[in-house]
Image 1 (cartoon, one colour):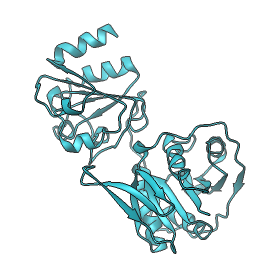
Image 2 (spheres, helix red, strand yellow; image 1 turned 60 degrees about the vertical axis):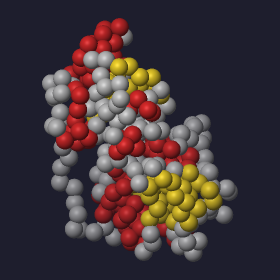
Image 3 (cartoon, one colour; image 1 turned 120 degrees about the vertical axis):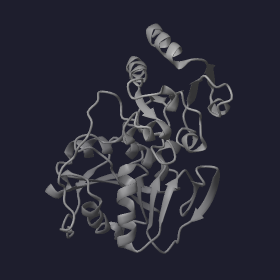
Length: 312
């Protein structure tokens, strides 16, 4: 039987939805027993939320002051100290998971599998390559711990209503002193997080300037949506890097994605192909974005977007 440890992603007080999506992936392995590890300074509230996720058999908490801020070099040794009891260790393929899981794999001396998008067996998975243009099947060794990140855009979050037991785990692992938390600089916004938002409005090079992005923000606020951007808009300095959607940005799967002034380069389409409904607004009727859009509107975004915002 497979015994899977999932590393919970959280902000110190709330469980990130990526964890429930990782649980959904683990649940596809036949007969799997799924445990969730919460590493935090104060884990109670996060652990309670994790215990409610359907499919979780047990929640393990490791409370240490060093875990107040999620540093991969600090968390990885604590995870490795638990590894002997598990056949698999999974993390979400988010900024958090992509930073942490390679550390875990390196300490265990195993190869990491990245971006699991479907499960075909206990040690066999499918993942995208070539910017999502091809899907490969990879098999992990059965005599070593499987360390992997899960492509959260490919899985729906596991439901709630569970009541898994919560236990404190051993926290005596040695913490390296060469890495420490200094400070965090982060923009503050009332908009939903880009990677977990159900609705996202994105702007591209066609928006023209950082000032013009105001109409993108206005539409997003009317919809209660997150705001993203194409790489071209980020490279032009219209918006900060953390808003970039695509192969070299964030891979997202909202229910609704509205692409405004975005041509639709393959690198961008890679980041949105799992979206529920894609709406494209562009003045160029030959733009590649229209090939994948469910709804397309050809026209001047500077006329269309204010009208749409007013109508909403």
